[in-house]
Image (cartoon, rainbow, N blue to C red):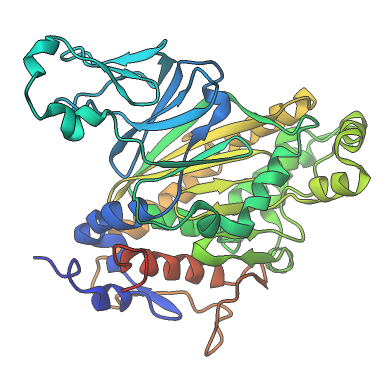
Length: 441
């Protein structure tokens, strides 16, 4: 049964001003439409330029079921290509990362392509003479979706009819500038491996939680209590470990999280923790501060180090932290299955302690065996199962809602205002009901 495909009104009715219908998490049909519409029409993170440092280096990933290659060109520019041979559709490369040299060669029938996607050579070339192959899509080479790079972060829009990059991300791009400027050299690099977790819940459930500063007080109560008990056993003059610095703030109360503040942007983007966050109290080495001032000036350095947001969301699939510099990619696998990738960003020219702090935080908080993540996953998976139960089919997003609430281009709210989630779902509804030119139907 198709309930939503040809009924934009039915989709919009799922997202009311102060609540959403449970079908947004449970409907297989909506999940398929998300793959076709929302993830095709939005700008999604592909990878970081540091993952492909040399010509011929490539990194593969998937967005909404579409296999992609990020590859470094001979002129050192970047290119995003579909990882799909134009002949029979075989994957050109199967490894996550590697170096292809000067061209890609399909393992199935040996069709070869330049690293910009242009068709280079085919076996039995004379067999294609007097055919229409070169005049059709197969002869045009690999599909290359639109791509944009900002401060080393690579994005793509799979639809030719989606919005322009600057229109879609707009002012939230300044967040990426702040992250990159934490390097005295103005550059970041991916460091260490990737932590991957698959959880049995809808992807939007995870993304909402990124902007939920109320849940740590109850969901992670055992985390902060355990950290306090460890702290109580330490000598009074003992230096506080990185782990304690990172776990103790989870016990901050509702008043603290309300005061942290948040800012929302168009298209579902947001910054949580614009005034303070659980990461605001980290010590910074004095030599690092001096290096930043030499590179960026004293005023800009104060802005950079003063910006330690709890979470930044680039809707629909990227979440970032400023300190520690953590990058999370949310990849929907099914209506009730989500893959989350967690990466560490290292500012070039910065002290090693910053990377150690990020790697420690990622292990403590996002590893499948961490003392934090299992709390969240337990909740997410329980919610996914219980949402189908009889009774109330609506999910409340009422906190701090006001009648006639209007979204402004940029809007500051408290850190516990569910406008952060309402903003995400309004963007979801817009992208899900947009016509071919990107306008809301």
